[in-house]
Amino acid sequence: MPSATSKQSTLPASWLLSPRKEQRTCPSPGRQQTSLKSTAALSTVSPPSAVKSVRKGPKKDAKAPTPHKKHTPLIPIDPSKKNYNKRITDVLSELSKTEKNIGNQWKAQAYSKAILSISAYPKPLVSGKEAQDLPGVGGSIAKLVQEIIETGTSERVQNEAKDERLQTISMLMRVSGIGPSAAAKFYDELGVRSISDLLHRPLTRHQKIGMKYFNEFEKRIPRAEMDRWQAIIKDVLEDIDDRFVVTIAGSYRRGQDTCGDIDVLLTHPEFTTSSSSDETPNSNHSVLLQLVISRLHEKGYLTDDISLGDVKYMGVCKLPDVPNTEAHIHRRIDIRLSPIDMYWPAVFHSTGSDQFNRWIRSLAAEQGYTLSEYSLRTKDKKSGAVGTPLRISSEEDIFRLLGVEWRAPEQRDW
DNA sequence: CAGACAACGCATTTGT
DNA sequence: ACAAATGCGA
DNA sequence: GTCTG
Image (cartoon, rainbow, N blue to C red; front, side):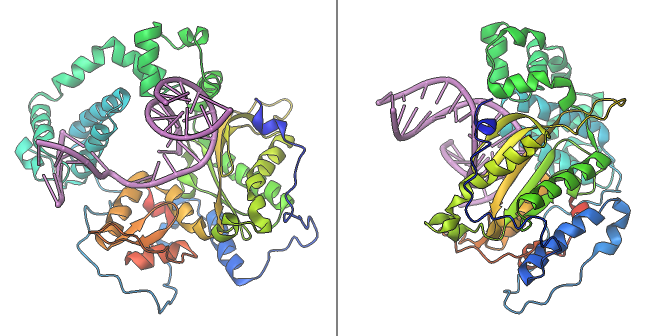
C-alpha cells in the first residue's frame, strides 16, 4: 500500500488556503450558487414519490440554437409498465451474461439492446418473426425468441448452465479486478477451480483487495448509509476548502434505496481546464486529489487503495465502528476530480443510468452533437469534425441544448 | 462485407 | 529504461 | 449480434 498513504504529509497546495471555519456560510456568487443549488437538490431527492413535482421551469436562455425536434428513438421507458415478455427477456439476459463473461462485450450489449426493446413491447410476442421488427432484434435473436415461445427456454442456455468452465469463470469474475481475460487464464493455465484456489495464485493488488472483501462488496448499501457518506465527505472536503463542490452520483442520485458503490464527484472553482493546462499557480491541481485522499485516510474512513492518480481514485471505505454494535461493511468508493467547466457533463454522465446515457447520446448524435462525460460539442456528421465545447453550467443546459424535456435524476433510472 | 457499437484513467504486462 | 498495449472498471 | 454505409 504505497502511493496513497505514503505522501500524506506533503501538501504544497499553494492556492488551497483553506479559510477553515472562518466563513463557513454558503458562498453567494452566482456561479457557485448554481452548483450549490444542484447539490442541495441532491439531498432532497430521496423517495421516488417526489418525482412528479420536480419538473423544472425552463431557465430562459436566448442564445441557445433551437434544437430540431425529431422522432424520439426507442421510447423513454415508463418504469411502471409491465413486461409482457419476461420469459423471453430472462433467457436473453442469460445469453448476454455469458457473452460478457467470455469477453464478447459487443454481443452482450446487442442482447441488452434487444432485451430493452422487447421489454417495452406492449403485448406478448407470438412469434420470432414478430420480434424481428423490433429495433435490435435480428435474425439470430428472432430465432431464439421463436424457440423460447415454443419450448419455454433455449437449448443453448441449458447447455451453458451445465458448462463447468463457464460457470467457474463466471464465479471468478465476481472478484473485483478479475475480468474475462484473467478468469480464463486462471482456469485454463493455472488450474483454478474455485475462489479459494485463488489464494495460492499470483494476484494484482486490485485482485487481492477483491478477495479480501469478496463477500462485503456484493452487499448493497442502504440509502441511509449513503446519506451518511454524503455528509461525511462534504464535511471533510469543506474542512479542506469550503469551495469544493461535491456530488454523490450514480444510483444514489437517481433515488435508489440501495446502491452498489459510492460514486463521488468533485470540482473546485479554481480548477478549470485552462488553468490546468498551463503554468498558472493552479497547476498544483495534481496534488489536490491526493490531498483529499490523505485527509480521508487520516480520518480513518479509507481502508484500502485500489488506484490513485491525479483525477481518479478507486478504493475501499468503511464507517467508523461503534462499540457494542455490529461492524460496518467495507464499501467500494470512487472519487473523481473534474475541472469545473467539465463538471456538469461529468455529473450528468455518472448519474446515468447507462441505458439512459446511451439513449441521450444517440439523440445528441442525431442532432449533430457529441456528448461525453467531458463536454457537449457540435460534431459534423460527415467529416467528424468537432466544435469547441458548449458552455454548460448546469444539467438543465444539456437537456435544453438537446431539446429534451428535463428529467430529474430519478426519472433516468431505466 | 467490414467496421462501429463512447471514451478514458490507472495498474500492469509486453515490447523495444 | 521507457513506450506501447492490454485489462479492468464504470 | 445488429445495424450502417
